[in-house]
Length: 154
Image (cartoon, rainbow, N blue to C red; front, side, top):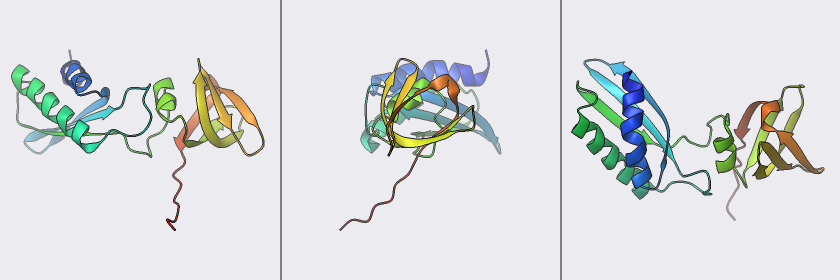
């Protein structure tokens, strides 16, 4: 079993205990140490963003799980964070987390759809555009991201 898989197996339950889900793990060399980056997110049923206290609790739990198992067995730096708003939406769970947000989709037929992701109905996205409500199969999406909207506070 490779190191990334082993870290994932240890980090997932620790993240869940803190109320988060494991989104990904990357391990890279950083001099004489390894850099272990663990990405966590709220469960797909939740809206909003994970707060700093919850991410910190997950970080402590994941660090303890790795240390207890002595994985990795060499010195490492652990970074635990959320995916960020600019993460590409590539899986159903990513779309679930993006509900109520404005998204931009590139479709296999070359079309572009931009609108508010209202729901994920099975494997179909329900998007409210300026013109209508569209239903788009996730399988037809070749690229997707959340549209970051900057608003001036009055």
